[in-house]
Structure formats: structure tokens, C-alpha cells
Amino acid sequence: MSGHELLTKESTHTITVIIPTFNRRVQLQKAIESVLQERRVPVLVHVFDNASTDETEAYVCSLMAQDPRVRYLRRPENIGSTGNYQDALAHVSTAYFIPLADDDWLLPDFLHDAYQILEARAEVGAAVFVTEVRDAEGVLHGTYPSPLDQFRFGLLQPREHLTEWLLHGHYVWTSILWRQETLACLGAPYLCTGLPSDVDFQAQIFCEYPVYLRNQPGAVFFAHADQASRGFNVSHITSWHSVFARLDREIARKGLFSPEEYLSLRAIAEKRYKGAWSAPAGVSLPDREKVIAAQVAGFRLGDWKTAFSLIEGVKVQPRSVGREVFRLPPVGRMATASAAGTAANADELLDHVVGWMKQASEAIAQLEKDADRLQQEKDEQRVQLSAEIDRLAWQRNEVALELSICRRSEADALARADTSERQFLELAQKVQRWRSHPLVKMATKLGLRRFFR
Image 1 (cartoon, one colour):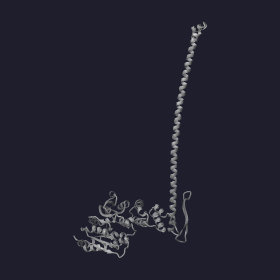
Image 2 (tube, helix red, strand yellow; image 1 turned 90 degrees about the vertical axis):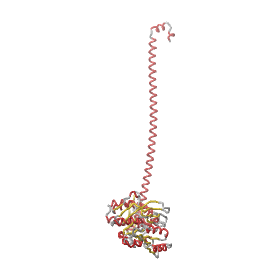
Image 3 (tube, one colour; image 1 turned 60 degrees about the vertical axis):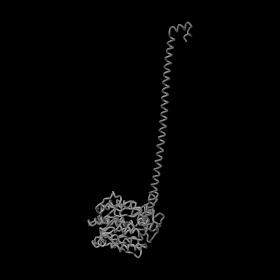
Image 4 (cartoon, helix red, strand yellow; image 1 turned 135 degrees about the horizontal axis):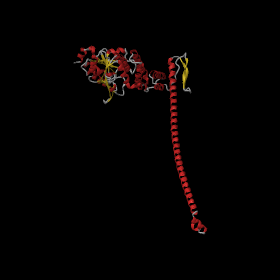
């Protein structure tokens, strides 16, 4: 079936694949061709050119002349990646759509199989397939979602699906076929939270709609050094706060989880994304922006380590008049962290509170360090004392052994002395008896005694 026949046959149930692009003529060709190879379902490719200066315009225009499924919109000036995506989403008018990055591509059968899922299940807001992450050599580095063996596939309602999503992370939206009605969950301009807007996009829709997950590769995410997702750093921390704040409100509004359940899941998600918002910025931020980012990091995202690192060396400056005195409690018996000052509003008070909490945290850390050192010294002294006790016990045993030997020797000597004395007495008795013998007495009288000596 030709592209024209597909467009006219079921125009109300067409898939629009929007491809925002800028100066990626070579990669763009692979992305477009991966869409146009599908001829079993009605498909449109709409390219949004963000004022490219390469051969993008000439290539897409020549393609339009060959295939009526191709659309093209060129901007007179670059409006930024987010702005380009926002405008592309605003142009979606067909039943289904896919945002496709100009350096990624779809895999065969994805469009057809995802289309069948949404056509058969009117309640489903999105058909989510697996995205493969590959480098320029085609080496597979992972998948979204991941790990696949821990995911539940098939039809999932918002509560059970969001549990998986918060536990394991968001998807690459390239391999998701979306129903056009889901855009109403967000409202124009659809991407509302800066660089991580794709995370917010998914969160808002997934709170509202059931989804169907298929354990089947649907697209390839091309991993390379020039990706926008590699640009996350601490300067985007307020954007991440917005993602979580909007999710908080939607979860509460829908009553999908109890507070305890949600806070536990939220903490897992925060830990996973912490690396994105805590990475050092390419350029130094102004002090005021550092203080604001520190407030968001600590109070909103619970990342006090990043908060304290942001305000290192920053001195809070008064920003208004009509100030009121405040006092913050001391920490420890030495009042290592305590503060008194003035603030005109809640924001200024928060500035001081963040600084005080940094001091308090450092004081507590020092106390814990000192406690660990004292405990270590105590353990070492205990070991030394135990060794000394063992040594003295050994010496005591040695002395006891020597004393035992001496006592045995003394007993032996006394026994020998007793034997000798007894033998002497016996001999004396014999001598006495001998002298008392009549013959001896007679010999003595006759002067023969010498013969008996």
C-alpha cells in the first residue's frame, strides 16, 4: 500500500512521529527512514527544523516530494531544544504520536505492534516498548526500562505502574506510542520543567492513564558525547524540584498511594536522580543562585550534602529593609552552631537556616568524629589492658609452677631427712643392743673391747 493510500485510508487513526532537529542531517536520515519503512499502519513524519545551517532543509524537502507522509517546518531562528519540542507537541493532531530524537531510530515492527495495542484498548494511554542503548559501534550498553527481569509487563493500572516506574526509573519516550488525548494531562506548553521535562511528561500522564508494557525492543537510543541528557548539573536542580513537586500534587490529588508508601518510593527515585542534579556546573553560579539551589536541594529534595557544598564560602547578603530579629538554637554544649540575625521575609530566613544547618551538620559530624576517635582509643586501651592482664596471668602461672616445684622439692627433702633420722635411730638401737650383749660386756671387762669397735 502506498503512503498516500495509508494517509487517506485511516487519517483519524494516524501516528504522527515528530522529529525536532538541529544540524544533524546524517542522523536525521536514519531516524526518518526507520519510520517510513513501516507501511502497514498510517504514519506521518513531521520534522521541526530549529534553523539548521547544514543540508537538513534540502534533504527533507526532497523527501517530501517522494513521500506524502513527510511534513516539514523550518524556523527562522533557533528557539532552543525545549521550545522546539514544545511547538512540535502543539502540532500533534492525529490519534497517536511519538517524539523521536533526531539521533535515535525506531526498530521494525514497533509502530505496527504498538498501533495494534492502542487500537484494541481504548483505555490505555500509552504502549511502552523497550529502548536499547547502543553506541556508534552498535554495542548494546543497556535498556530502558531496566532491569527487564524485575518489571511487570502487560496492562498496568496507574498505581501498580507508578510503583515500578518510581522504583526503576523513567523510559526513553522514543519507544512509546502515546495517545493524543494524554496531552490534556499536561496542557500547553507540555514540557514544563526544563531539561528533565521528559521525566515530568511521563509522570503526569502515568498518574492518569493505564499503560501497556511490551517486553519487545521498539527503538534505539544512540549514546554519544553530544547528547543533551549529558548536560545535567547542579544548575538544573530547581527543574528536578519542579518534577517532584508536580508529581507530589498529582499523587495526592489522585490518592494513588498512602503518604508512607509514596515517601518511600519518592526517596528511591530521588536517590536515583541525585547524580543528575548534584554534578558540578560548567560555569560558576552567582552566589544568589547558589543559595536558592541550596534551599531546593536541602528542603525540597533532602540532599543536604549538595546544599552545603553549594553555600561553601557564600555569605548571605541582606536583600531588604524592615527586618526582624531571629534566633536559631545552639548545637552541643559548646554552642558550636548557633545564630542570631535579622530577616525581612521567609526567603531570607531560609538563607540563614541553611547556613545554620550546615554549621550544625559540621558540628555534629565533628562530634561524631571525636566520638569515633575516643571509641577507637578506648578500644585500643582495652586491647592493651587485656594484653597486660594476659601477661600478668602468664607470669602468675609461671610463679605458681615454680612454687609448686619448690614445694615438691621441700617435701622430698623432708621425706629424706625423716628416713635418715629413722635409719639413724634404728642403728643406734642396734648399737645399744649390741653393747648390752653378755659377750660384749665380758670382752669389755677382759680388755678386749677394741676388737668389737
